[in-house]
Image (tube, rainbow, N blue to C red):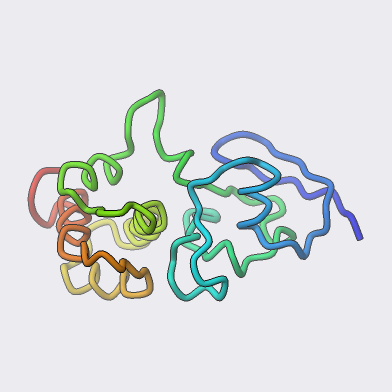
Length: 157
């Protein structure tokens, strides 16, 4: 059954007429051609598909489109402003907090949600907050350093 779902996507009003039970990940990737959120496990466990919904990190592979009606959805594509990287994107670049890059957008979006809730987390809070995002390449120490830099806990802001 089709419904019209309206929400704000990366700062722009968006309206789709589709089945509201479709997973947000597939709507973003196929209907809206935003390929930043990645398919990983399909069960909300790996974090590759993480986006922000009203500032909170959510797994788009297990979030139905209907649940984002009237809300603000931000993907990695929506973080940069006027061609300037978001501080997290810049810090990931500067700290080499990626290797193959597959998990990077999910990591950055999860970190953005973490910093939304805790603007100045401790190292332990960062490690715990990022625990649900998996990186098979082993860049976790550089990822934590990048988040620390942005949060003001260490390194450059």
